[in-house]
Length: 204
Image (cartoon, rainbow, N blue to C red; front, side, top):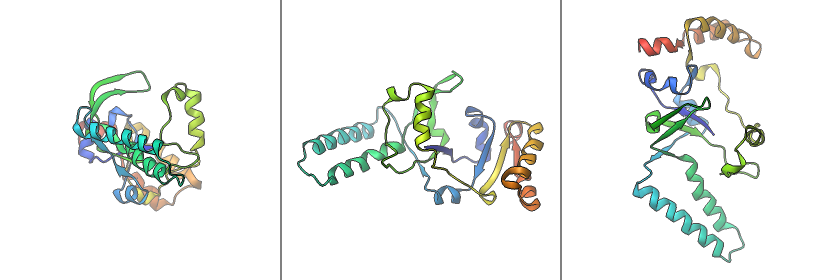
């Protein structure tokens, strides 16, 4: 899956540093057109989660005990459990790759939207955690979905965020070279949408 945050520029100050200091802001129309969907946040002690998980367990038992050979019950079960891919903890520990951990981090403040590819023979809804313990294991599963890509065009970009002023020229240079270079008009338009993390942190 690929995750995005539905945040205004004025709200980035409290969130952007959590996942890095570079970013791309895309239009809501682009998100909807590409099948992104807001996640549902759930508190671990809520009655909703308790009832939902109990319903899935009961549904699974019904599928196992069923004598139906058409596969329709199994398909219905998979469609139901697929909704778990759009549910996230309201609050919990945020563990970052560099080893840092933020306790009691409120994920709901991110207002996350997700792109989740449809389940197929190549894509499983869930992978047991003991099969993705190492970087090599993760790479093997990532390779299976490497053909799935989210693409966007310059008109889909609302803003580009870099860490500091000295990064701006390097980004503009890259825009002149990527895909054999954009037109001057497009580069000028994108350059006008570049913001720095320092600007957002201090001025927005």
